[in-house]
Length: 266
Image (cartoon, rainbow, N blue to C red; front, side, top):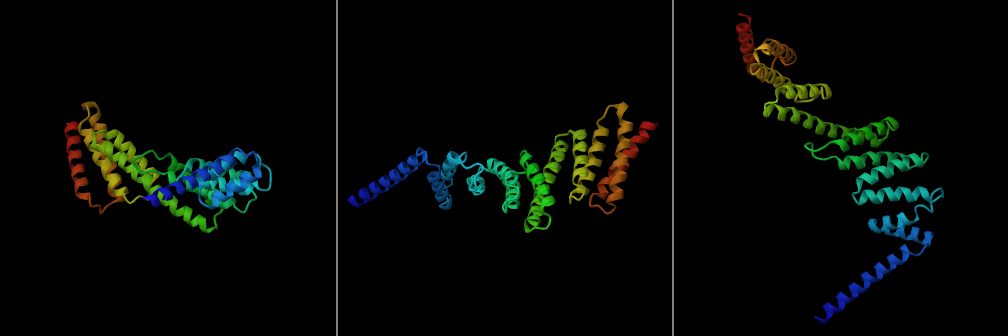
């Protein structure tokens, strides 16, 4: 029991001493000493304290030789703390400020990669996904022959699949809740934005089906126009996917559409 109490006391004293040393550094008004300590904390992966000390001395080192290393570590410290918004900003600022640095390529890549780390599930807002894609595209334009360019292309493909999934699911949601005009508009956007999608066949089929249901539920004055639109969508579907697994259903829709137009033309 005494040993445990003694050991606990030592730990408390040690932590108190560390805290006092850190607080003394923060108020020391000795930039060189604070900067060295910040680098020591960074090397020890204590990024929270490193950032706190860098914040104090960063103004003193602007324009000095140490600034390049300081700003690079400052950006990475935020990245390692998972503060990706600030990390992306600081990496981009570093790239612009130290345009001749050997770390410029890495900073450009990390600015985009930090946004990639913010890219959420496809169901959520994809603002940072778009930012990451734009950042990686700019990176590839600047450094097309580096190993990082290959990695950037793979990440772009990954994020585009996410955007594609979101686009499809948005149209599918409209379809499921009976908003057929919105579904068709959304699916048409999917065709335009993701022409190589593996779900293109399904998208075109759902456009045909949405068009037919909308026409069937339209007021009399709109029926003829909309059934003719259904036939146009059907023709596109058959042209692009003559052996589709939805071919039987699509032909059934065509048959019903022609029957409805025949009634309207009587």
